[in-house]
Structures are given as C-alpha cells and as structure tokens.
Length: 218
Image (cartoon, rainbow, N blue to C red):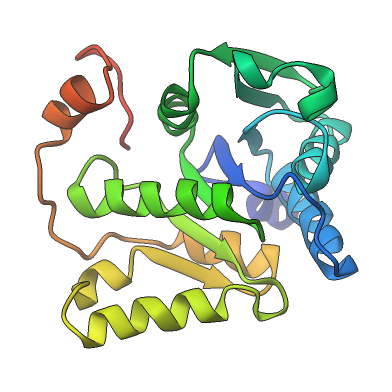
C-alpha cells in the first residue's frame, strides 16, 4: 500500500495541456487524450488548459474533472460563447486576449504537455519551448507523440540542431514519449541542460507583464 501511494506522488501540482479543438481522424488520438487525463488523476495532478468542451480539449478536461481533480480553463473573452467553444467544465478564467491566455496558463502550471493538434497547439508549444530556451522558465515541456504524430516535427528540430540553428543542449528541452505514463515519468526526471539567455525576472516583468512578486518559473 505504501509503495502504491509513493507511485502516485508527483512533483507537479498542475500541468498545462495544449491540444486540438478537433478530435482528429484516428481514434488513437482520443484514446491517448483520455489516458493522459487518467494518468494526471492517478498522480493527483490538476489540469490547466485553454477552456471549452470540444475536440481533444473537451476530452482531457472531462477526464480530469470526472476523476475529481481541479480543472482550470483559461479562455479569451471573445471565445467564450458556447457556440464557439462549448461549455467549459471546472473553473473558468476569462482573459483579454490570446497573449494573456498563454501567459496565464504558463503562470498557473508546473509543466506543459502537447497532445496532437493544429496551428494553435504548435504555436503554444513552440512558445513555451522558446521561453525555456530564453530562461523565462525551467518547467518540463512534453510531447505526447501518439502514433508518431510529432515525428516530423522532431525530425525538423533535429535538422535545425544539425544545421546550427538550435544548440544540442536546447534540443533536450523537449521531452517526448508515445504513452502518457512514460511521458509523465520522463518529465518528472527532467533536468535543464541548456544555458539561459535572459534574466528570468526581467522577462517576467517586462515581456509577460507580471509584477515582480509573481513566479512563472520553478
């Protein structure tokens, strides 16, 4: 019993999940999303996400909510009408725009995971990777690479390393795995290897608009 309880302990209190507002064509995307939700619940981790109840966003929020964990949906006011995003479960935090949405999700979270998604998911993912590279945060960034969905992206990043546009140490910012259980485990073991470019505090206050007392980094 003690061993089981020990396995359920996590260094993360809240994880931000980026994912599609569509469900994708493969059932494996939906299954992996529900599996991730259950994995978070099993480790007593709360969810931060972009709000709404459609697509994979709806699946992950419902799975975590049904498991009894707290769900925080951060959504711009212009996207709040139900006909656009559906009805968000759990707590809803309305923000002014997309930039504030990303900053608030980052501030609220201890780590980030990207499920399969489209332009919006990629934009959110690459921004938090860039923030890590710059030294704004040192939180783990994970890719749930369902059925090799992100293989092409990882190959592109490896090509950028090969061509000298991304440093080999910065390549290690991204943690990837094919299953939720393996991914969260690898993220628990993550240790930053890259050099920070900018002062964490100056970027929080000047670029993200946080007062000095706020913490976006661990």
